[in-house]
Length: 405
Image (cartoon, rainbow, N blue to C red):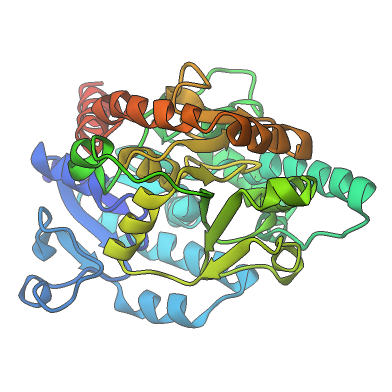
């Protein structure tokens, strides 16, 4: 069946990348519909400040509102994966009877392709946006981390969400990846997590995200701040094992009492694991979800953003911190490893699962606090290259090139 519509459907819940893939396609007349759980109707945009982007009209979207309700109720990974599967399946039905071309985010790919398999059909063009590393790859890293942490500190870490996916489900997903025409990843580590499973080279492109705070970066970076008596550390995350905070907390605890007094550490988290939460040193204070302006102000006032993640699909918060002039502590298994060429230019790269590496950074900035000021100045270069404008250009280029084949 030949489809008249040349555009692509985009399949995703929520706003993982602030609708930038949809906008990239829409700007180039390549978007058919953005299929999601909910997108704010145009007439409500002045009243509802979430689930929208002013550059994307609601008539270019399909809101499957029932899934929004399910996502608000369900907090169980075992159930959530089934919701993702059903959403993918329904989206495939809508896609086949409209354009038959789609960009499907990785959580929904198995369900999407199941529809086509049942009816012995094929999408005309299919791109997977791989927004997280492959599950087995994540599990191997987390399991090794658990063993190392228990060996050193005799503490058992909680079960990670990726472990709820069975071997069969993960294997099916890898087969699904072989069915797509192209893959988009935000980081090299995400691409690597897929590629290690195959001998042949996958058709993937690495397109780093941008920052929602980018516009005001120049002004903020050049603002002079008052000297702080204490070094202000900041972490923003859902506090789970994958974020590596258990190592950062132990690193702080390894310092002398006099050294610890040099730091104030704020952790912003809406969800946290009790085991890791109880490890927090006394100089750590917790805040729940903040309003955007309050969050921006907190980042601007901080001296170093701390997130030694074991593995990330990218890590929006790293770039958001850099865009507001705050240096970062990161690992090689995160997005910044792709674009911070000199790992001391505007941040500190540490090995994963390393108390020693993180404690050395703490000691370094105690003894040379001026290094953070120098790093702050260099964040401008990152902002000029890694941004949403370039993200949209690269995504559109990938889609246009695929359409020409």
